[in-house]
Amino acid sequence: MGHIIMGIGGFVLLAYAATQDNPFAKNSSEVISVDPETQSFTVSDNKRYFEYQLSAEKSVIHGIATMTQSQRGIKDAGALITLHYFDEKSAKKFSQKYAGSGQCPAPFFNRHAKQKLLMASNPEIAEKLRAWKNGAYKDVSGWQDFKLTGRCLTKTIKAEVKGKPVRLPRNFYSRCLTFHVEAIEYSPRNVSS
Image 1 (cartoon, rainbow, N blue to C red):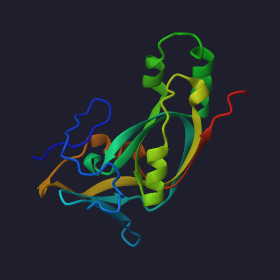
Image 2 (image 1 turned 135 degrees about the vertical axis):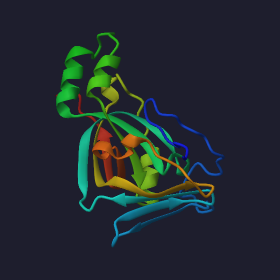
Image 3 (image 1 turned 120 degrees about the horizontal axis):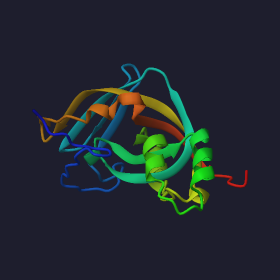
Image 4 (image 1 turned 180 degrees about the vertical axis):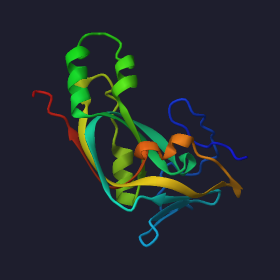
């Protein structure tokens, strides 16, 4: 069939030739559009074409960002970053058990951390996502409170690279893993409370 072109966790990540780091650069061949009538989101360039169905309802996601990882935009099916985060309960539990302890927190993160692949709805959001640098991971003092507003991706309408169909990972839409961001807020966390 086609190739799986993007991965998270244990999935394979295939690289394709890059021409731009910023998918919204003015001289880029990338095109992005949202059709409000059909709720479809398209991101494409001269080699790649991805069209997705967005959920009809907007969602708000908030939590505590523990880490962000850069993605490659159009080369990663439109994803700009991967967000790793906790809810309030998990953050409190982590702080009580691991903060300053020197213990390896990997098992805790594997059980309790959540992830989202984030796509941008416009150039301003893309800039904010790309600027969101957080490598704190187990350093509680570097965690950030965040709030995202947008829509979940619900299915692929069309995915092609160089005119040939490609497959995305099966979990690309599970539990709103991939999120189309329309508004974003993040700030340092108040760790004194």
